[in-house]
Image (tube, rainbow, N blue to C red; front, side, top):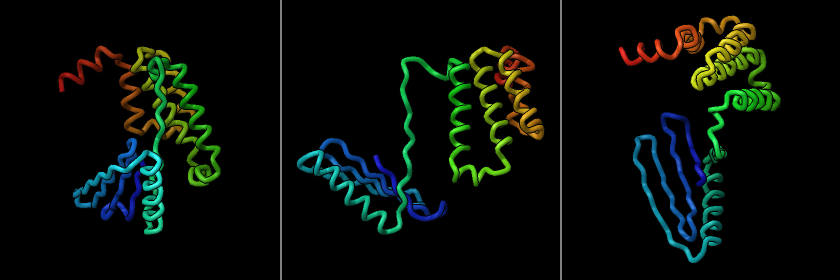
Length: 176
């Protein structure tokens, strides 16, 4: 599936093109929420892909921008359930992103804040997976990396969870 957008948020239009075998499906949407769908059965998948490419070029020539798709890998096990695996993956992701020259330029001066936010995310993941002690390590790292993080509501929520533990946090959540 390929998605294209045109315009800014309040007036944004979008077009989604899907190829499924010899079938070409196009969904057009407007900012008012209305959508128009059309489907065309072509003689082969190759012909459908070719029609998709032609349509994509036409949209781009009219000013539409193709949106990048996110790739999600599927594992035999849930990788978020292994905090050490997630820690390595998330930290590597932040290092990789901050090494990108375009992003590094945009993030200049906020690298410590970005890392601190990632440390809080890692702490929440550890807590969620029953590793409350490990969440303390990451919350401390967040504070060392960016002391103003202590004023952030997400940090405060993670800290309270780590302090009171899952039993109390669960009772409080269900009482409200």
